[in-house]
Amino acid sequence: MLDKSIIEAENAKRAADLETDFNQLAERLDRKGIDINAIVKRAQGFGVAVPSWGTGTGGTRFARFPGEGEPANIFDKLDDCGVIHTLTRAAPSVSLHIPWDKADPADLKAKADEYGLSFDAMNSNTFQDQPDQTQSYKYGSLSHTNEETRAQAVEHNLECIEIGKAIGSRALTVWIGDGANFPGQTHMGRQFERYLDSMKAIYKGLPDDWRIFSEHKIYEPAFYSTVVQDWGTSLLTAQELGEKAMCLVDLGHHAPNVNIEMIVSRLIHAGKLGGFHFNDSKYGDDDLDSGTIDPYRLFLVWNELVDAENTPDLDLAHMIDQSHNVTDPIESLMVSSIEIQRAFIQASLVDRKALAGYQSDNDALMASATLRAAFRTDVDPILAKARELSGGAIDPIETYRASGYRAEVAAKRPKADGSGGGIV
Ligand SMILES: [Mn+2]
Image 1 (tube, helix red, strand yellow):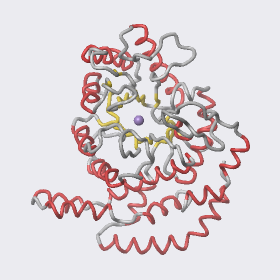
Image 2: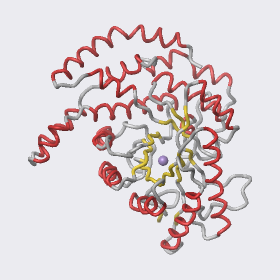
Image 3: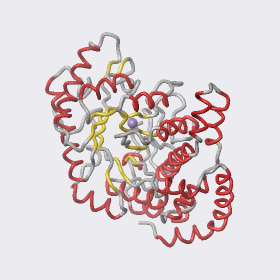
Image 4: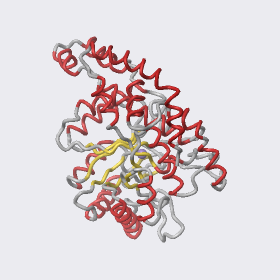
């Protein structure tokens, strides 16, 4: 656990500058009729879930280059998540992955409690074989032609729900790697029917206060076709299953140039938007850090979410899903949490009344300028003030580096194996 005195000492170095910057921004926003303290409260109320797997170094299909002090198990991962939340105050929950994070639920809860963390959506894994399973997922899982393989995949998802129930999770995210590499390899219609039947069996095991998220992905690991390749298929699935079934949008799981913010709007309209996996991409599902490639797109997604925030029953699960290959994962996850929070706060500054007026007057130039005015506002002082007031670090990265946490865990944790490819 991080020594609180380090946060205090680092904050003391920066408090006066923050006050100056904050007061200047407060004055600017006040001229626009915006109360900065209300915006700070919104920032303090923001939270995104950290994926347990994100605390380790990722990799590509070619190789993985582990870093120093990699977490050896879920308890190490929770320690790292605790550091991320302690410094940023923006990452209060963790999304677990089964079987990678399997452990005694009481121990998981106890460790999470140490840092005030809770558990977000559970993630099942039927995209790789585990040593103890009888059926292989080489040719698919929930949509496999073999009934026993499908049953095994359903059973695994039901087990994820059971573990989740014991640790206070309320959702299951299902992403499958099922698809085909060759035209003709599978009957696309029958394959989708089998998938739906399996999902219905999982849905039956869902507690009343739970939700199930279907996550679409355009390609990979299957390169010709994937069963749940787009938001249309995901929506069909959610609609066929029932009211507890929702769609999850992973920002990286679309073709380049796809208008993701419009997909978000459509799913809100359908009452089927359940959550997000935040990341960024340049070419495909690159799983790059949130906000590093196209921060404006991240803002536009949040613009839709803020616009719809008073929609009845809109309850979104926000999660990060990234692969950290060349950075310290704790640093990447802290920066990403803050960048997602930044887009939320920038979107909260949009003058919606003015925007609606420009839209109804067909004033395209001023409508666009209204969005960009919010996007261009440097909200750093708001985010830093929110962290300071919540007991976090004014500068999480510098404070983390000053703490020496990575060197400390590197001395204690076993050296990670770098052989083989990683999970991207
Ligand atoms: Mn994802």
